[in-house]
Length: 349
Ligand SMILES: NC(=O)c1ccc[n+]([C@@H]2O[C@H](COP(=O)([O-])OP(=O)(O)OC[C@H]3O[C@@H](n4cnc5c(N)ncnc54)[C@H](OP(=O)(O)O)[C@@H]3O)[C@@H](O)[C@H]2O)c1
Image (cartoon, rainbow, N blue to C red; front, side):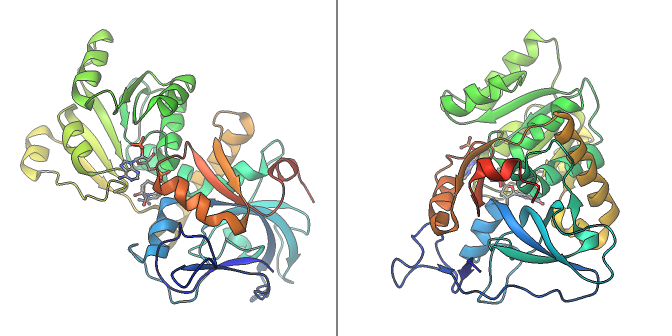
């Protein structure tokens, strides 16, 4: 099978196989994984999403390290190809989605049936491959951890990126007033088209003045929930907008800078700071993650959320997908597909 293999840690934006310095190679003869337990399922991967974490994993800068060589890739969708003798929930031909620590940038992957989710009728299969990590993270953060309520004010940093755009949409489903922060006219116009209440364009100036002016027009005091996948200076500025009793969701550090949240101010203002590592729920509290993904798939089927895919690439073009992430070009998600995305969208076999 075709698979993207990381043979040494390094820059994934270099064309695979282009020179000695490349970290990624496309293998056309990678072995198809075998069913390894009676309850395992072999899936023909149709679409798999790129997450910022995949970029960090290949660079060797992620919190979890993997033995070389490894096939990167975490969330995916596809079609059941074969099933072990004890599998009861799925049959050959079923559309499914899931996520793994590594291994989805390949034509086939094996998963236990308990880790698979059926993709409901009416869902775009490519979209389902982008759902688990980005939407799962934002849903667990906003719904499970922050218990976001209608009428609360949600401030989303990195709002046009993978987890950010998911947070924006989930915030709207919860009935929150959503303020989005992004850089550049294309992202800002896109976010406005998504029905966001206010968008801050970082190219035009800082967050504080823009958000304060908006809050004034709505007679609102401040921000109740800060969703922060960016960190650095932006977190520092955003803290000046938080209400008494606000919640801070620490999601990631796309800026490269881990922010300092002063405990003395958290004390005086009664803030709650949630550190959230979505993947660790699989080990520590799997039912939260399962319920969350089932709810998200039902929202996708009902059209309450839409996964926006800015670009789909072939596995041979993975470096271009990583370039889009590095250069902050992505709006929503960028994908690797193993078929024509239009054909995958409606495929059931
Ligand atoms: N805690 C968890 O379980 C979890 C799960 C998933 C992701 N994450 C983390 O969340 C962060 C975002 O992930 P993602 O997949 O949404 O990434 P993404 O799609 O690349 O989005 C990141 C966004 O951050 C903004 N940004 C600000 N400064 C940046 C910089 N110096 N370089 C790159 N982007 C910058 C960009 O927005 P503008 O260009 O508009 O400013 C961009 O849209 C990452 O740190 C990732 O590791 C954490």
